[in-house]
Image (tube, rainbow, N blue to C red; front, side, top):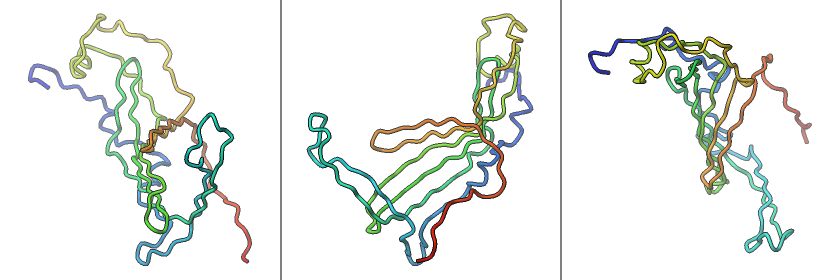
Length: 192
């Protein structure tokens, strides 16, 4: 910022990021004991097209792969509210970066993925003025105070996940968080 530009700091920028329930993820999770490499807690299954299978030979032949695996999933809080600028509304998202690595018991890679979880529940109405435009390195096209005073759009979702898998797949999921109590209840079998 040059010396002739005014300093502009909306109060929300000085507020710590709101990660909400996502903050509980911040750590590394594993399904094996790294001290003795004890595993067998995961079972990976997938149906793979046999080599040479193509669209002209569908249904083709498939191989059902079933393997024990070990997994490491790390979550890191991105410091501060990540600012999504522009327009009549601004968003300061609590962002959690994740990295997932899954290998078979011989250490061969089965799945790699990285991405972000975003807590999107907080929107701020931030009317533009000469000072904010200069600070954001914008160029006013309307006179000061000529911005919209209309309703604030609030998206129907509060949480997002974006992920990338190295063989060319990406995912963007949007959802709404609903308050629950305690950990999720997973079904389990009986002892053999």
